[in-house]
Length: 306
Image (cartoon, rainbow, N blue to C red; front, side):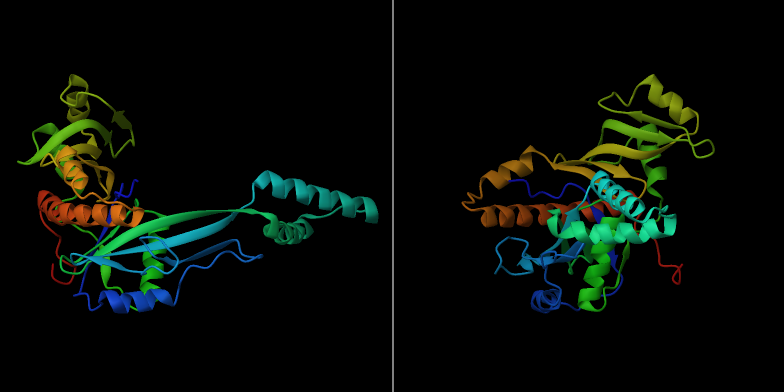
C-alpha cells in the first residue's frame, strides 16, 4: 500500500474557506466520474478517495478533507492511427484515381479516429489532494503543470468559487536554497545529497546526485554565481524531500520515526490503511508547511498590501 503523497503543489486560501465536508461532497457529486463513452477521448470526474463505488466523495479526518479526481483516457498509438489513415487514403486514391490532398487527409484522420475509439484501450489515473481549511492550505499530490492546473480548475468549477493562489514567499526559494548550500541551513534542516544549480545569464546547469555537496565542485559552481534550483533536504528527522525554486516539494518521503507510528495503527483493510496514512501525513505536513514558509522568509504580502 503506497498512499503517501510523493510531490506537493501548495496553494494558499486567500479568504477563509466557507465550505464544509458535506457541502463539498454535494458539489463534487455533480461532477462524478463516468467511464469513457464510445466516442470519448477522455473523461474526468470525482471518485471516493478511500475507494468503493458508494464511498464518500470527501474523506474528512482531523479537520483535513481528502478528495480524488479520476481521469480515464483512450489509448490510441499514433502508429495505429497512421496505419489506418494510410490504408484509407490508399483506398480512395486507387478507387477514384486521384491524389488525396492535405485538407482532405485531416478530415479523414478525424473519421479514422472516431472509428477506432470504440476499440481503443483505456487507462485511468487518480490525482489526490486535501484541503486544510483551518491552516488555509490546498495541497495537491503532483508537481506544477497541466495535471495540477486541470485539477484546480475542475475543483473551482465544482464548488463555484475557490479563493486560492499559489504559494508566494518573501524570499525567492532559489535565493534561500543557495544560501543554505553556501553556508548552512537553519536549525532543524539538513542538506541532502542531491542538487541542481543553474547560471541565469548562460543557462548552464549542473546536477549532483548521491554526492557530497560540501565538495570543491559544489563550491566552484557557487563561486561562479550559479543559483540552486533544486536541493535535497531533511527536516526534523521526520521527512526528506527535494525543494525547488517553484515552491514545489518533490520526492517527499517520511522517515523511520513517522513510519514507526504508522506501524502502530494495525490497519486491516485498504481503506483503513489509506485513512491511517492520511491522518498521519496531514498532521506531519501541518507542521512542515509553516516551517517551510518560515524558512523562505515568510509569506509575501499580496500586491495591494505591498
